[in-house]
Image 1: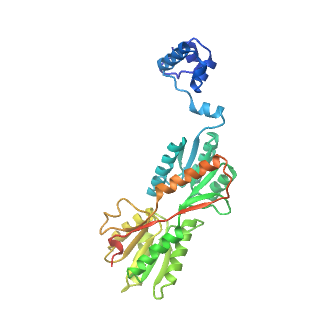
Image 2: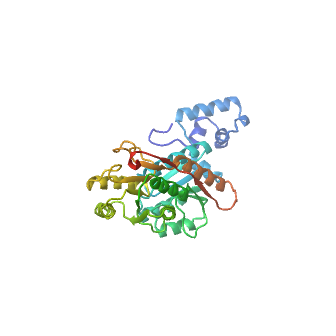
Image 3: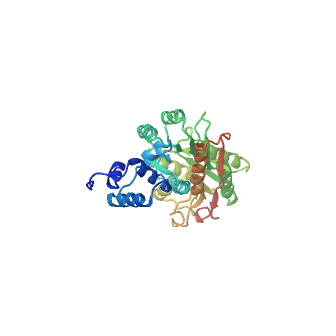
Length: 339
């Protein structure tokens, strides 16, 4: 009998059941019909007595399958990422895979560490939310040659399946809403654009839509997420520059919307009364903040689910051309953009 501290092995089970390891392996692999009833009973009793649990990793490696999917998330504190993960996890459960979640916290060292770690665990595929990833990390992703699906952000010059929002349609809908509500001066606010296609696509659609309406002023500004003084100055200046006009701010993501709301409070402006506010990503608190904040809701759960489905297809050998799957967003109108 093994002690509590050590984990029972297949040899321990065979010894306790007075049989060989081959018979125990047959039992574990579902070949019970090859064993006599008394032997079956002895093996079952030995497994129960020893509290034996086979190593799924070892069994998987023996068959050339680990059933592990690596998930690389740039920032797990972001509500968008949390909701996407929920969809991925549901699809993993349904398809018999186990997710290994790695939160890189937007740090290059962590990105590289987790990429190497996932390879050492022999994951069968990777789902990546690459927003914030540095070029070195992206380059190593490209070299990994694992079945891979990107969520929300493309990698320049890398042919890979992508699942995300129809950014152009969503930003067009949001901009048209603000103009229809009578706003005459619009500010599109994002974190630094860099090579992040989601920010670029939303800004491009914002500009193109505003150009169709003569007399509407459309500006954009970039600010790192936690530079509060810079954000305060941008918003204060925008408000003063277009005094006498109806003004609105469009925030490019949920994390930034929170910072904009805090900034407006600091500088004494009220959304809905003094300035309009519309943010990408639905936030749980958006309906509770003041008169409520209008949001562009992404179908995050569906995006996560579809990404996992696609990576499983690649693991199973589907060789269709690289595809981009886009989902429509939904505008949820609240008091921050009311007339």
